[in-house]
Length: 48
Image (cartoon, rainbow, N blue to C red):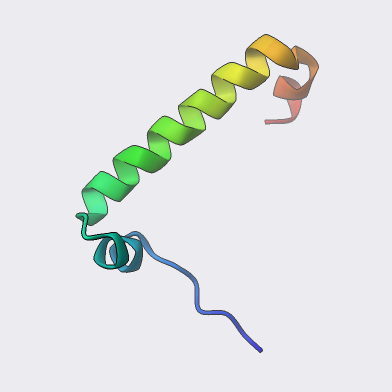
């Protein structure tokens, strides 16, 4: 079965948020992940 890709707009509708807010949350989550990797696994950063 083929899954339909989830878009920012679809997620926003599901959660009652704008697609811009979903994009902001996504960017913040990636920033947290990046910071955590830099602190705890600096050798991994060369692959990102």
